Length: 327
Length: 89
Image 1: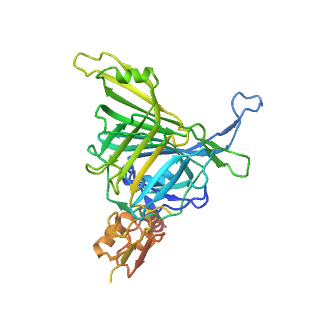
Image 2: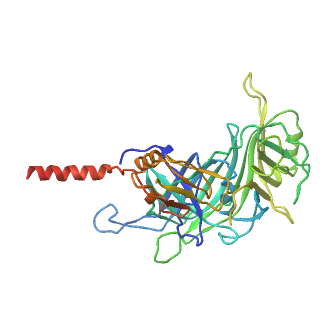
């Protein structure tokens, strides 16, 4: 077989009926890049037998670690919202409104769903079963909303195929799609007014800190994926205009913040489809750094924010309006 | 009669358009007769017949295939090796 290029590859996904039982892809997701790895705790025997190097090797427990970086497309985002420690509600009759909020489950179970991920690399098929998203990183890069996801999976297989990808036209959220709002308060439903115009870039992160757990059974694959503490936050740069936000940092002022990405001039609320909203219902600044930069550079503040739990509400909400009907 | 291909994915609306490399566009749930050129281009790219490539869930293929399936490089190499051995003996 001749050498291949990344552009000749493809990533497909399917929702699993039984977590860890591989299902051939049914939806093909245009991605920017992927990295999926077979990660094994390989055993090298340190027996003492008058030689000073390990003397045997045995296969150990393994799991799958991966990342997918993709331009957020509402055709596909809902699949990845389901595949994590989320409670997802779906409303509408098409287009559909998906809303994912965190729950306190220790591993994936209903209503969450696990994914099988099929990858074609140089026409060779790879199958990863029992995959879930451990971390989402929504970021505006070159004006386009992207999402970088860290994933864990239970096992790897070599699917029989053949697979024939079917592609949808790209439906990206570009530089004129985004708006960031900072609320005047926090809670289950923060009060948002006009969009802020001070933000230079934005990255919002939800990290469930997952681990693959191997238990003793006659199978080296992982038994389940455990979720640990959920860490929520964002980092950005702000034009430094006055000390208002610095004082908010010092005083641990708590508010809500949201990033909306929609097609055209509409808000998320008035959009019917192709819209995404990432909302933290309660945050405080964690760091706020402002310095004098170079001679001709703008005085900016480097800022990180940390999301907090909301009593009687959700710490964060991931929303997506999509034509895709996930059942 | 050429091959007719139907792509069906219930997760997407009826008017959703899918493209398949070398074979063109297909509206979700609607059958389309592909041209001999499209069939041959697909077979040349994939190296297997359309019916085999689209044997999975979500595809329906009917009609008569006309494209010639190219020999794979591996088969060609094997054949050449055997021919060579045969010629020498």
